Image (cartoon, rainbow, N blue to C red):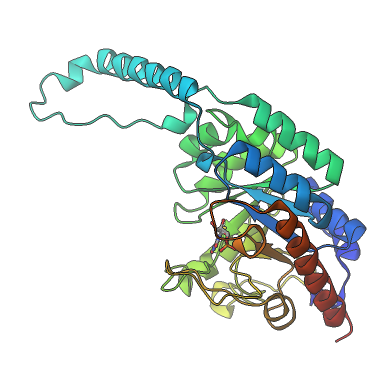
Length: 323
Ligand code: S5P
């Protein structure tokens, strides 16, 4: 098992540059804490990251929840109208005979327009505090669409996020699509093999398949979002698969809290101790446990709590090494 190895020792076992860099950062900063910053105002977002950055190996963001400024919004609207018009013209011939033509499908997030300053500041903070950036985009579409969403659009995720993630639901083609963009840039991908929510459908055979998909794409997929180490999963004899002794996937685990057991929307929490020691996970992902639940973000308290979670995560890891 890889659980007897240090993060630093495990870095050499990964060929993916983002995975190696994450493991080296964890070792250097003595932090297996990933702070999830689901804050929707740019100023709050950046100040929380500046405050917790020194304690984290990784910052998890989801940029789609950042509000677009009003002037940008109006511009965006023009873009959408323009694209819709183009679409109608292009498809006019096939559309006209359809009497009940009711809607047009677009991918709004591949429209070019966003506040590049936010990305600039985020990247600067990543260098200042020595953390990697994980965009929690949870891609879930066909290969061609996810490649467009990953490379372009408002957010141009691949150009700045070291790590992103995807649902395995479309099958292996989602990895091909994303890796065609991310691999040349040295990026890495995590598959959502399990989820922290009550009643999650990501279990059993689905989780097994996620592990097999990752195993077949080791150059790009270096780990999972999951609730446990999943050792031996997807290695059933009936599949004729051979256990690879060097198999070292990273397990990043959300649903971590010291104070809470859940929220009223299905989220379930475990303590860092349970996650790292009992479940054998590598990185704890903590959001509201650090930046709080209210609308007004308290930066000072976020800093104190980040330090507390980092210490708890690291202490537990050191305990695990001695087992
Ligand atoms: O199974 C999952 C997968 C993810 S990525 N459960 C999760 O909670 N997440 C994400 O982790 C979720 O989208 C959120 O950004 C974070 C947990 O936030 P918290 O505030 O509940 O700690």
